[in-house]
Length: 322
Length: 258
Image (cartoon, rainbow over all chains, first blue to last red; front, side):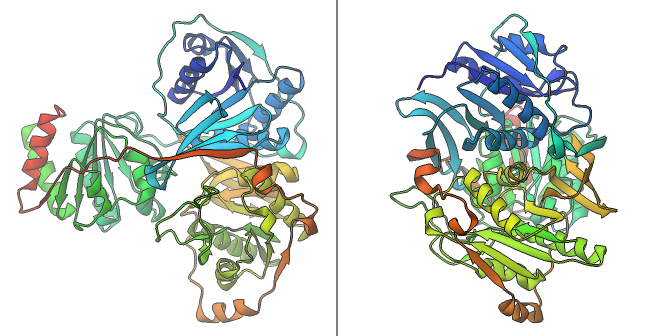
């Protein structure tokens, strides 16, 4: 079936569309000229940029007034679809709000979902999406066999965001209908975990630490090195689960996907879960005691050694160079 | 406080995964274990029931082949009873069908104040089932909860967000998905393991629950190809002789990072 129109679940942060939104809009406009950005919130300030990246129309729910986006935005989408404007495909980011909204909508529309994808195409098999499995060693392509709208989610950085120099998109109201009991969860307060320096998923250099650091206090070595290289500190799931660093530091399948110019893995063995999140890095440097560690299979430079010796020496030398 | 925890029994992640040659589905024919991600939900449920002072923790799972060994682990931790939906016709079900089946089983188990799930399984990681169950049951939900408290019938949770976390309040009954690390799962004691053998696990088929099994045909999706991804080549690996840091610095210089 041909793709006639595509909706993109669109998000904003700090008054601008998120990079993930712009990535999906860029991909959407390669599938059809009929691209709609669907915003859970007020869109007046971001309609210009959404249009620039290819949206020809913006549906906006208006302020959600503390309601969680999952039930609210999915209900607004369902109302527009019931009203007769039904897209061929809806693209979601593989993140908290994207997953919740897609899940709720899949029940409302009785449609299957394809998640964790890195590509989508309109092919002889119908609409197909591709997802990496086994730590990215295999690529599985699946086709939707039923009726649209097809619900698909994508890992961050699956596509490069490129401006189309499009005109600002017209904003059309997509009000949230009465939600009943599903809408009773309320956000009381929003907490931002401030971090200085570049964001983990945008930094040119990422230094991540793992269980090989031995104890939580050694994580400061990772932070010091990241700072000296003007990069961001990251972490494996093991030390996030152990409570050494917040979840927002996690690189991997269930954390952030990073593709920096340089990725330094310190004391990380390279579990599949972690590799999925960093294998796309341009250059990988790994330091680990165990020479059999899987991380060395993907590293451009591998150091078999103790992070407690190598990192302080490295930090000292970089500091002395100023 | 009666809590139902959704658990999944998966192939041991320590053994390499493989796909079935004809269906392209993940092979699940060996021994299945309790998904490590589910230990957090079971522990959270046990703690909440203890705090409430009454009620019990039940577990629900779906498996095509009648497998119960993973569920026994949750019972050994302290859950009181289990329900297993087992039906060969459910093999190949997509996440939506799984959610419908689990929702029907939860309804059959009686009134739950709270339903807990992991944020996603470790083998399939579709990550939609908890929120789909909430929608099927018409419940509010707090997904990605990293801290949970209940008082006077109201749940308060810190919910993970892109930039930090949100404090969310939600009336019961409700569904939550909990992140790894939310609590420290207890190890089953010997006494717990022995007791688990006698704890009841009720088994239902899809038709017992009034759900028409979708299986392969009804999944709404089919795999059209599986190919090897381009492998990344390993580079130089050296043993640290006390000077490896110099090597890293010159490597970074070549890349013009410093």
